[in-house]
Image (tube, rainbow, N blue to C red):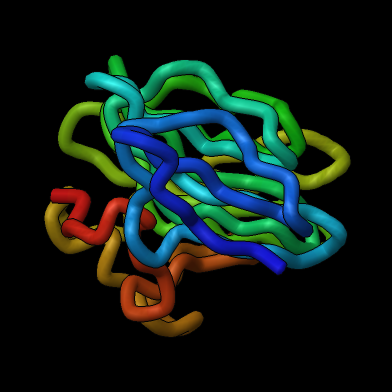
Length: 171
């Protein structure tokens, strides 16, 4: 069983009867279990953490797109944004959105300056696929079908399939 419970003036997530660390808030809609893991997004002071199997991430301004299977991952925003998958922190971008995690890798939309790219991470490394001609930084995250993807893109984020764990739009 997995649920959030108030303990005095702080919140804890209880997993199989064992209470986890205390937080100011457990963010609504973030409790999840799957792939042999439990996870949620919690806030303590001004820090937001991804908590996976009772282990807290570093302090971030925001955590989005928490997923536990087939790999453990989330998007972390603080001084810029990173994708974090299986405890590996990806490169820093000005903004990140729409994490998609699969058996063979993961992908997400990332922005440096005005240009968005799709970051495709596989066993053989990371590659960035640039914005298609005519797409602006505001339009790029709205790619919604493979035919809209730039040549060579193997995973394309779909804006309607991903929602931030914090419950507010990322932009």
